Amino acid sequence: MFSCFIAPLSGKVTYVRNQMLANAGSFGVEPAEYDNAGNIMKKGKNSRYEFGGHLKTTLNWQINKNVNLTSKLELFYNYLKNPQNIDVLWESLIVLKLNKYLALTLNTLLIYDDDIKIAKTDEKAMLLVIAHAYSLKKCWV
Picture: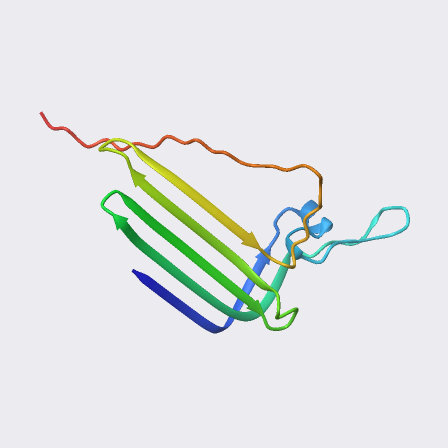
């Protein structure tokens, strides 16, 4: 099953609750202003508003009896600032049912937002999560 939602006029709000992160300009909000001594003259803003277009697609595909793919893609075009740069949120989930009790799951998440600056480092990181989930059916005697 495939679905597509298009909103040519929509908004996007980013809210940063932690003032220390807001002062640093995290998540694209306006950072704090400091004097020469390093004292805060003006606090960083806690919110950022954007106006643009939004596209959301969802794909649910049962490849076979034991393999299922779910993919969600969201795109946001900011009309007012750098409209050529598109914010991307793409999530994919593959579930492989091994047997009645066991399934293998692969989940990927890609996030890109041009307004959010990330410090560059020489270190490479990879996150591996191993989780265990189970469900119990009620047995009545």
